[in-house]
Length: 445
Ligand code: NDP
Ligand code: 2IT
Image (cartoon, rainbow, N blue to C red; front, side, top):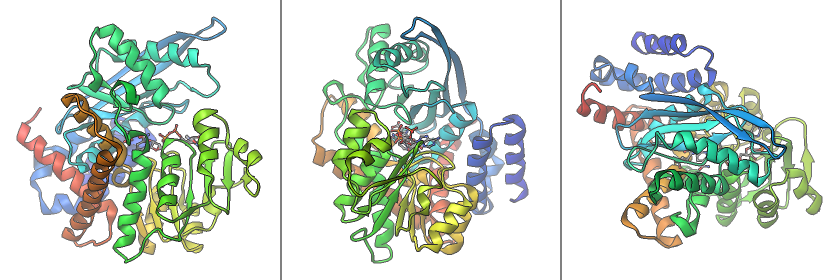
């Protein structure tokens, strides 16, 4: 790293001790911004790097609730309002036992650049809790969400900060949180949360958007080589919102998706995933991947190794951060994988990214390829503000246009800096420039 970038990175490590994922995300962005900083020294001179790595506000709070046995439980809640240069803070809420401030900060930091890439008026933020929804009753989830929102409601608003879902937060949780927000504020502010139900201000396509967008991005990358997803073997990790709709879109475009996974293992289904069965098991029954195998002849459950051991043409990591390491990348490359598009946030480790880039395959970082989710959240805000509702085709056409634009601006920006095909540089440089120029215009705030 050059001196100026190295100094900022060291300060981040020093000031945010023990936050490994945050350090990793900052390092990845700063390293790839070096050519931008050399070409445009005024960004560093204005202290923009130091400012952009420091959240505008970080909120941490106690979330007490009572479980079904009458026992008091205490979780920790977070909201990191990272950057509001482009619009209200926007980003999901994650409920997972692994959640800590470093994870929320890495996600919030990535969100700044992702949201900038969509070209919509949304700043970057993220939140969540170490609450684990697995195995909890609906009533327990409701009580937790109500307690969480009781504090969060002081900090959010349709023009201030607009949370949505992420791991462990879907339509059910957004519903409980919206109900509590409405009750506390005595105001039907539909635009305060996105990912709402269709009957109360939600947008068509929001459920599908992240997975669809990831696949559309992969399709755009393939098109630069005169290829498409038709006939390709695709491996997918995860079995949640992003994975399910990535599989749906990839199959619609003629690919065969042969895997999915959760924290109990992965499933190989060489005949192609039976999407209706997967939705039944995961969305309706909230079951485990083994429940799919029990009902699907020919499918097998693997509990050793990683889904990346399965040979494929295209890999779509759609579960969580650092789920694909250098060894997994080497295996993928050895077995002929030529495309990786990230549905998850930061699923590839730095070693894996390095391997993909050295091999010259098509590799899309999550902040570009998974931006369809937040982009459609911004479309939901737009519909809420104008009290309209678009049909599925209208919303999907807008999503498709946004994903094409993001893809093309990554390509053009990478070329501008003499590194054609480098989607990491393209995404970071294009996203950073948009935010940085507006921060300059707003003065030192
Ligand atoms: P879900 O909660 O719907 O699904 C997450 C899936 O990933 C589950 O199958 C889960 O398995 C698995 N998973 C999660 N954590 C782990 C872990 N530590 N180890 C192994 N498996 C794990 O979440 P989403 O599909 O919404 O999110 C998936 C990824 O996509 C995340 O990285 C998220 O940040 C990112 N993303 C989500 C967006 C959205 O709109 N929802 C938008 C953009 C990115 P299990 O149930 O066993 O834990
Ligand atoms: O990581 C992400 O972009 C999300 N979880 C979606 C955020 C949103 O506000 O829709």
